[in-house]
Amino acid sequence: MFMNTTINPSTKISSEFAKQLINSKINIKWCDCANFKNMTTELLDLLKESGCVKLVFGFETASKFLQEKINKKISLSHAEKIIKHSYKIGIWIDITLLCGLPYETYEDLYLTLCFIKKNYKYLRGINLNRFIMKMNDYYFHQEKYKLKIFKINNNPYTTLGFDELEGNKWKNKWQFTEDVYQEIIKSLDPIRVNYLRPVNQIFRIFSNDISINRLNDYIDNKILNQNTSKLDLLIKKYKNLSNK
Image 1 (cartoon, rainbow, N blue to C red):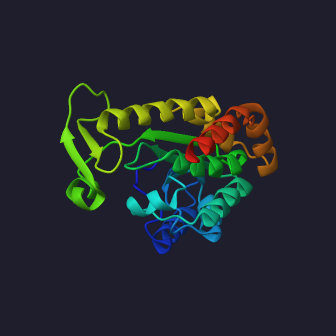
Image 2: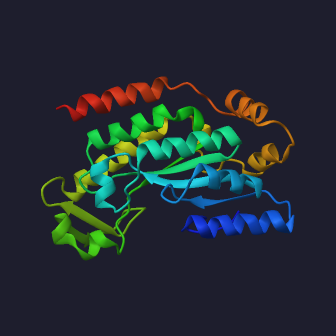
């Protein structure tokens, strides 16, 4: 498990890395973080050949409005292409999500959950996180983002709270964040959202010299729960709330 911020800061760097592993014939299985921006299907094939069995992509949100605010614009169609190709060639895909971003609404969450539902079969893990204010662009440009940031006590996750000057005060904002976090977690397959997923089991599965079809069939039917009935209900709820 490599601990890079991303395996592909550029296509060239990650391609050269993969080729070095292949040429060295070191024959290891490995995983790392990745980003959608510099990922291609050709690069995925090369990473797979070099021993990659799992990638964790920072996705955060499907809302174009919020993507622009956090400077993380992602083409949803490209992300889907990468996720599905990874499934096809046998790379386990996790994505990270954020809830509670400044000025986030139920409509933003609805868009994200629709993306999750559309790609549910191909996603092996979904890492949901509460948005935590840090020394970031929001902090240093509060007026630009129409925020008021201040120190707080007695919160188990953060020491910085914020008011949305044209939206929620901190108390309501944190309650919103906690409520949607719990709702989303409960709507998803427990195995997909379990931070303590047995890494050894993942690598044991991928270490077997079996076909990708058999591998995917085993994971789909023996490990993951494909029932989206709870997710469907939450999508409907957030759609109705976004229309109010």
